[in-house]
Picture 1 (cartoon, protein in one colour):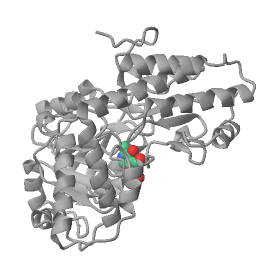
Picture 2: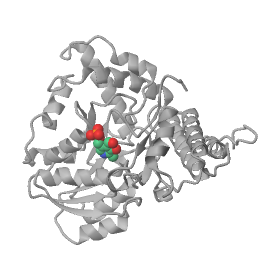
Picture 3: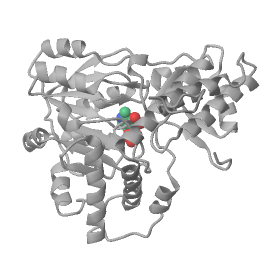
Picture 4: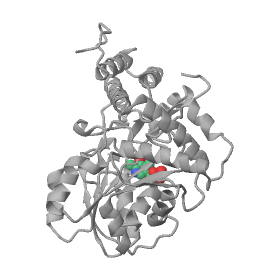
Length: 395
Ligand code: PLP
């Protein structure tokens, strides 16, 4: 760790590798020229790899929410019946976007901390028809829950085979195995500031042929986010409007790093960091918020004990340059969240757990020095296949 920099452990924007930061400082280029076209193709190819798709992936210069809005307005018409499956605040937002544009949204509201249940989706879909689309959140960043997307998509396919499956993959695609084509997902959206190790400013939307087809008759209004225009421009090596070139420089550099590391190493690193975070927090006496069968690999959410005041606790963390996220909406002041996605390493997680342990000791809580660190290290190494006692790789 660097004492002049924070350990930025929020679930995006994430800290950036220095090569990515430097790439963002490059001189501008002509966004209608061949150098740009080459960069656009490199980034798109990388995205296709991590999305698990052969689709055209649209690169939009906007926040992740803009990508979700694009997913809605490019596939739906006012009055279309939509099932919004929500397991937290981002699922609520997704449903709200669809309703804002006039979709007839029915919500399946899963208690926060739980994942959606394929059986419940079947029941909800069976209760009415025809459904035009189902909205799913892959990783609910507000609760630290990762939905079982393949199982949910299979349930939708069974009961409502014509419904488009539209997935908010903003905070996990790129960090965990993902197979859009194999799982039959029609639209998947992600954002540059999450797993992709770049600054905020770009969203990605991958549409199946079925989704593009739906777009031809979809009547929701759109102009800036009209994906047909994006598809047409991207085929010519451009974007329809001036893109966030600086963020694209970063994405290009980050994608190079991701390709060099390889998918399986990236996924393993995230799994190890997630395991270490969970074990460290639990050893320090925190109760994890999520149903652990569906614990997120990119963000961990923990209850704040009733006698631990968030402001005082967070002040001790910030004093030690650790930046974590608080709770959102109804969870404000009740939970805190640790992001472990992007360029995160096990060492950074150990530093984070160490600081939390120190803060608890300073606040006079009953904590055994080193207990959180030891548990985190053991769990992280075990996830990497190393036994902490011998240092010898398992198997
Ligand atoms: N969906 C999920 C699951 C997210 O985690 C976020 C951001 O945290 C968003 C959507 C919205 O992304 P943005 O803040 O870039 O609009």
